[in-house]
Length: 123
Image 1 (cartoon, rainbow, N blue to C red):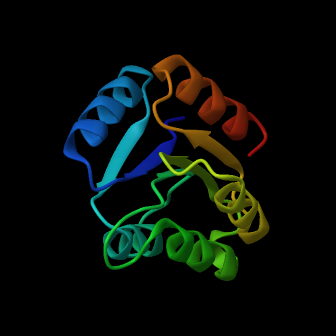
Image 2: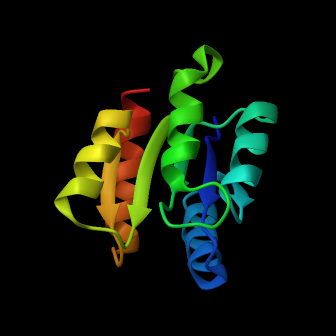
Image 3: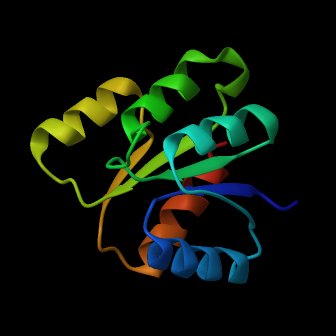
């Protein structure tokens, strides 16, 4: 079974590198370049894990996370924040909104894959 991963980031280089490593691991990869696009994709596609940046224009990562957590049809979607924001208040806010994992950028491909695999095993 192929799992569906949604990468949400406004930085093209990050999207390209994540897409490459995830496809190599045999994941089905979807891409959103902002929060609004991410919300549309999770509404219309079956997504297992969302790799989500916080700092984006228009709709930020917190808003996307809140949308996912407030939609009962999406209760099984796992959300990982992959972000450069790494102050205590950001981390606490993320967990209070229901994020499954918080990873700071930069992070190794190996670490990101391990965290995704760990979440999927408990899916």
